[in-house]
Image (cartoon, rainbow, N blue to C red; front, side, top):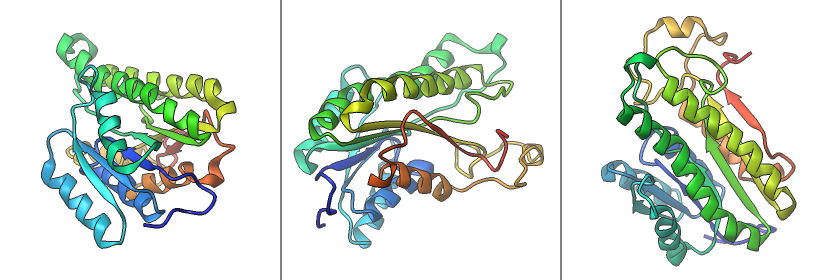
Length: 247
């Protein structure tokens, strides 16, 4: 695929991209001419499906299996992708898990797993990604947070802590690299129709002013903008895609 004029040549890495929001973002970025590294942990079939769809649309992509919570794996993942696609210029930290329980019942394992996946892995990947971005004087880090970060949701103390931490991390790193041509932003989805939200009670829809759940494509549209050259003056921000829930 030809390079986009005015933009350095490089690729986008989307973690947790075999389905749901991650898959939609991978497809959206590919449609803008980004070669995409589709990261997945266990759903190889889903990742291959996303790869096939990108290629059918004329884009370029690769699938990379990795558990991003493994210590040192972030550097290996980025190096593997760079060996095939060039420098990393767009990082979308989307991989996430939930383990819902009231705070009194959350186990150490549930706490550690949710924090490791939703926050620590995002930090480690971002730390590794900043170097090639700073060298290129162009970079986009997009963290998929949640409306639950700044808004209480009983039964999700671990998830809320991780997502609130992700928003705080976004702001801090954005300030640190703003002069280097690198932007760091967060997207905070509300209730989105994905496998992760399947089984949530219908009563939650009544709290949403739009009276419906969102779609992965609506989240991906924001990621597509934040990855673009037009978003060069947007950094340290959190965009809520929640049908008015946070209002």
